[in-house]
Length: 350
Image (cartoon, rainbow, N blue to C red; front, side, top):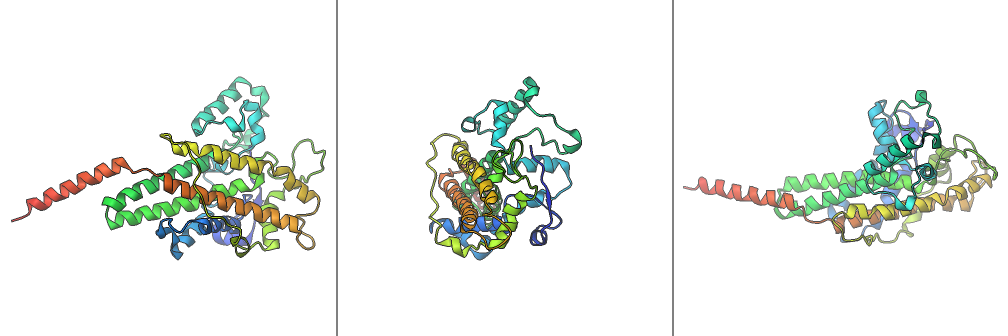
């Protein structure tokens, strides 16, 4: 159940166009996450991803899902907004545990609807005037968004592998572009997950009881996303040395390995959820202050989160590539096409 505060940032407006809304990392931060993931790729990863043009495209696409959020079109807002977060605390009224969620988005949505219908008193009332996009009923779909993007990427590598055996040069080139697009967009959601405020109902200032005196400032989210990053000047070069080579997840061998990455994705998000209070503590203790010199603790925390996102993203890219099976349907279609072409060639022979 989230709303997003307006934050006008010139740098973001240049690349996105129009007003920016509160999001996990501004464009520069999301771009950095994708670049760190690219730096983690092994040398035997498909070379078409390594060209300067491909790397720039992947970096640019890190901001794409946030660009969609600037639209006034309510159906797109309804679809896109909840993919950027999950409020883990809001699973309790559903009587669901984060470690036992279905990997299937619509199964989870059905559970959410059933719980609200059966126990309406367990949920706070919704102000219809502030719910034009009909997202206030939702707790967020970030783990599903990441898992689904992974499935799309694995599909892309599957049909690329098949096209490389029997497709045309144009078909292979188109497959390359599709994969580049999915890699870039996918990085946005993984980057969102590394911003702890995208895993909690305390996404923009502490809500409810506040015995530890955490900030309730409604600019807190935007400060963490971009203001602090701009102030401390976190640069990619400083993180290069810390990037480890990307590695494949040990997914179970089932007919649906895309679903099998759901568990490590949830684990990744839960680890960031554990950092919500430490983040608020850093702010309370003036380690993230806009005044004076940046503290080492604050700088290391934010840089560390970006590095985590880059590593997770690289691991997902490598897993999708290595786990992608042959596209058997496409292979059959290409074989039929080749046979038909051979017959046509025979028919025109003198």
